[in-house]
Every structure is written in C-alpha cells, then in structure tokens.
Image 1 (cartoon, one colour):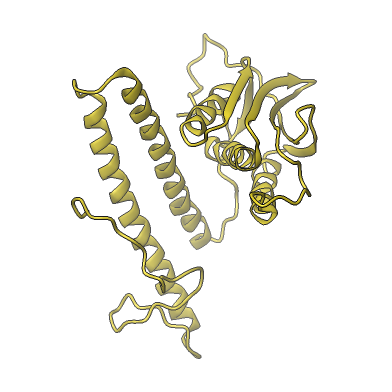
Image 2 (cartoon, one colour; image 1 turned 120 degrees about the horizontal axis):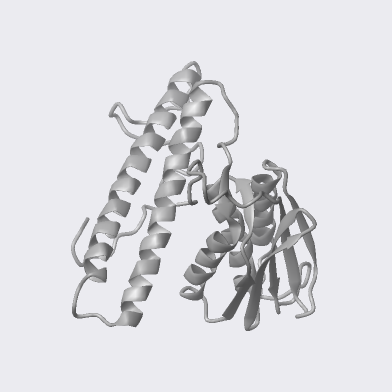
Length: 259
C-alpha cells in the first residue's frame, strides 16, 4: 500500500476475458491454437488478483481494528468503524466463495454451497445498518425472529442488491421488513421512488435489472422466489420469499450462527 497517495486503476485493465499484454509467464494470450493455455493463464491471473485483493482487505481490517480500540475516538466513530469492519469481512467471504467456485469448476462440480440454518432477521438488520452509513435516506427496519436454510453469503448478496437498488432510486425513505408468512420467510423492501419502469434521471433500470436478476438466481437456488409490485409508499416493493426453517433446539449444539 502506498502511504498518503491515492491509487487508480489503469484505463486498459483487463475486463472479463480481455487480454493482458506482456512478456512474462502471467501474460494472457488469446491467439489461435492456444485457447487452453489462455484459459489456464486467465484462471491463474484471477487467483493472483484475488490473493492481492485479500491482502489489501487484511490490511484494512488490521488498521480499522486498531482504530476501534483507540482511546481518542468517540462512540459514534467507533460504531462506524465497527460497521466498516463488518462490511470488509463480508467482502472477504465473497472472495473465498470465488475460490470455492473455482475449486468446484476444476472438479467439474456445479453444486451450490451447502445451506445453513441462519437468522434471516439478524443478517438483514446487519445489511440495513451498513446501508444507513452509505445513503442519506431514512432506512427503517422491522422484523422478528426468522430462520431459513440458505447459504449466508448468498442471502447477504441478495438483500444487499435489493436494498442498494431501493436506496439508489428512493426519494427519502426505504422500509425493510422480515416476517413469517405461511411457511415462508419474507424479506420485503419498499421505497418511495418512482417504481420500476419510470423514467427518471437518477434511475438506471439496467443496473436494477441486473441486480434483481442476481437476486432471483441466488434465492431460487435454495427454493425461494421473488415478487415485484408497487407499494403503499408509491415506489417499488421487492419481496424475497424463502422456505422457513424451524428454530434450532437450544439443547442441541449442531447448529452454527451465520457468521
């Protein structure tokens, strides 16, 4: 890391299956006759990139952890740094999931990560807390104890995508609710924006569609579904439905918290 100097990505950084020019062994080639070699080198480049990103995240976690225990910051700042630590750890989870996906690809396996019994309301509240630091809008949360069997990283990504879309288009307020509904756990996000399909300068439907496509894929793989409609606030209502799971038996020790 450089001290006190901002860094920017080069304009010609590789995107997707682009070409990285160079003469070293890590250069990506895409010429005729060496497609297999090119794919192998792309995979190696991605693994090295994730290694470097994880190293940077580790540095950020170390620095932020030192700030949290410092005596010269107030409670408000300490709370914000703790939330930043939580967000950074989720990013580390995502990188580790990429490594797991690569391992499954090499083994010709396509199975989804195994589901865990997780507290949906706790995880959703954590996402809401992080989003409150990143948006000027009011983000409200209500919810009681709710359990589901799902991969926690997948659920975090789903809730984060929906909430990010809502905060991007909202006028002033977003409401998040977690409730149990006839054997399903519903994570509902309402906003007071223009709704889907409206034409507004700050509304980018392409990003919204991409985010909701990701959400659909994430939750449908665990038996869930996605509903989109208009809410009482005038904007969109996105409702993620997950099969409910029974709460853990407090006498048993075979369950784990989601983090």
